[in-house]
Each structure stands twice: as structure tokens, then as C-alpha cells.
Image 1 (cartoon, one colour):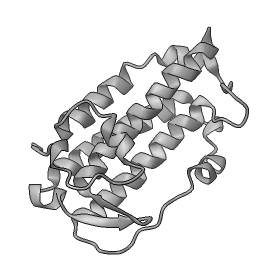
Image 2: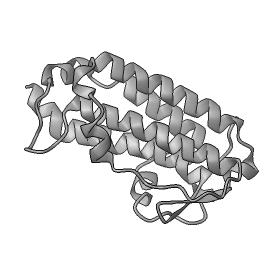
Image 3: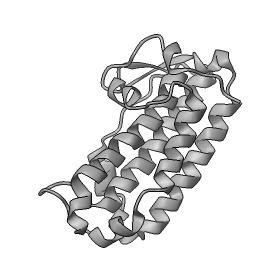
Length: 176
């Protein structure tokens, strides 16, 4: 089991530090599993009632937000794997708006998108549990940002928390 702690992240990465800061747990395993439990306990019936409404022009639908979370889970997990294996290849960033635009998220069911995240997160937990303490401290460069494997794990949890907060603050009102 992972004993990796947020306090062991040596350099807080620019931009991504907000996601790390959003995670209340110091233990990576707890951060990932607790955020998964929070995902599962989200009021999905209320979200389904929102349909394709958005809280402001140009904003994503709930399905697009969930697809974005899924895409980011995949991308950050891939980056963590590369860095954990001590791969020094400079990795590119990605344009989340372009990904959402070409995701066809609104053609899918909310339940399918929700279940996809559960599977992705369980896979990420297994992957991070397979890393040694040494490999969790390996670092790499992604889009000009120096990231450790450990930081990427907390970014996964924090990114999800960030978007769940946005959903609660801005989207839940649309279901009333």
C-alpha cells in the first residue's frame, strides 16, 4: 500500500498546484480512494435532470465536464507511468477545449461516463500502488512543467475535486 504523502512533494508545480492544494488528505492512497467515494456518492439523479443545460454561454455540459475529467484521468495517469519508469521524454500538453469539442460526450449517457471514471480511477489506484517510493519521486517535464509522479497522483484527485466543486456550485442550480 502506498505510503506516499503530499508533504513529500518537493516542488509544487505551477498551475497544477491548485489541484494539489484542493486535496484534503496527505496520503495519496486515501486521496485517490476518498475522491472516488465522493464521486460515487455525487447526486447523479440531479445531474441527469440538468441534461444539456449550461450555467453560462460557452460553458461545457455536465457530460462534457465528466468526459473532461475522464480524459484528464487518462492523460495524467499516462504521464505518471512514463515518469515512474524514468522516461525523460518531454511530454506535450493538451488542449482540453479541443478534446471536449471532439469527444462526442453529449452523445453518450451520463451513466456510461460516470462508470468510465470509476474504472479509470480504480486503474489509477492500482497503478500508483505498484510504484515504489523511489519511483513516486521520479520527475519529468510536461508542457514546460516539472512534475513528480507523486504530484501527478495528487493532481488526479485534486482535478476531480475541483470539477466536482464547480458542478455543485454552478450546475446543481440548473436542476431545480
